[in-house]
Image: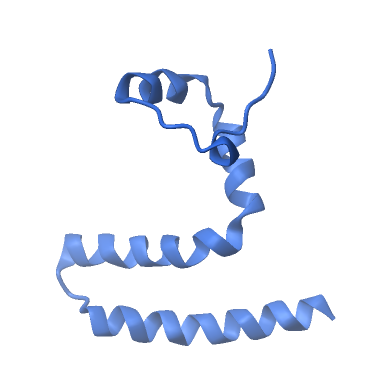
Length: 85
């Protein structure tokens, strides 16, 4: 069986094809893909986490989320730069 990178091929799939493909993808493959693209997913995951908290508890405003993200992003970036040295 040959491998095809659907993202690079820009193939459009209908709902049934997507459903069938979902069963063929191993959880390890998803985890590996996310690990390889951490920098791309980190802000999205952070946003999803706080959105879920807001949905559950209705305590967090968008302004709060923005401030939290900014307060965490700078130390993370600095730490990442320090580790590269």
